[in-house]
Image (cartoon, rainbow, N blue to C red; front, top):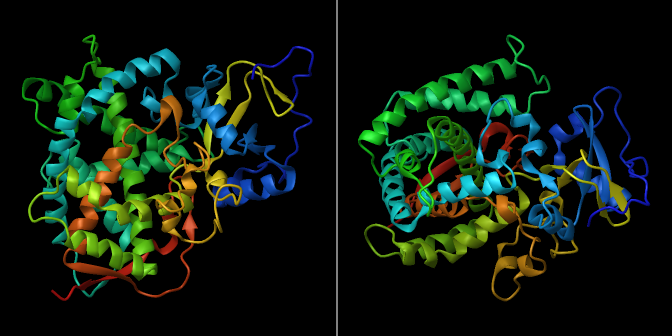
Length: 446
């Protein structure tokens, strides 16, 4: 709610965990953001602050707070200002726009997710997945995460850019995207030579140049790939993007789609290899799919896959903290937060809270099933894709890609862990397993 003028506009009364000299909580956040925030919430309650990169950030840790911040019915919170660490690398991306400007750009982008276009993406995904899986060897240990990162990038080159799977530009894109993502969380925020930020900015320049060269090609001869659809995209009033907007949106979208999908597939692979009874359930529904291309009915029938994916995203959300910056003073639970304050919504802690979930530390996909529906205890109890106006525009595409991959892989193979030692997860910038998640594919008995 808006702040009342009678109260003091200060963060001094908001508690915080002990500070490390110079770096504050920055290293704690990079090492274990969920642990930092779960500990702070347990000690200080749902309103506390942490100091990251020299700035205090107020965290509001409840499902109600998620609804307040992400729903933002009063237009109190700037996503652009919140994601200040991405300004150099991903300017103009959809997530870095606010209010009416964001709404206008999202309406145009929505045209690239219409059903006929999604059907074309699905066909491209199936073909690319089947082809790329032939390169995965049976009965040999390999690290799943780097393998799926390479695969999703090559699938992205086919589906998003219309490139052939063996196009050498895929390797260049992979290197550039990795450099951009690494730079996003670099402690050094200026492109000082030989730093992550310098490498990230050089990678952005390379990507920008390549995307700009593609625009006239796609205008002249559009295909059914995503980039062509973005070039053609217009809202119901005929508004479209200029070349700079196209490059900015596509650069951000490729980064978001590639890294988050690779991470999601890795989490699902970990779950299936660690809990083989769930792998059996998904194999059963894969075997029940009709022969031929998967249609909407087939995707909808993969309900066990939905449960496992939802649980994997609950335990290891792609973005456990969603930053915003207050554009006006506001009040929350008796605290007056002044304009200009960085504010964090914390879906990662909400999705691990016993207030909303039974034994939240346990892997239990049935919690999402019709008999329990724990995700419906609150509108924002389960929010791995954010919410409100900025809810992930590609969530249905991502779910489709996961299902297509599992249908192709599990039709003929099982996935096993090389050993059953617990997996440690790196949380920032995107969840990934330390050691890459060594696995083995086994041919299924037919």
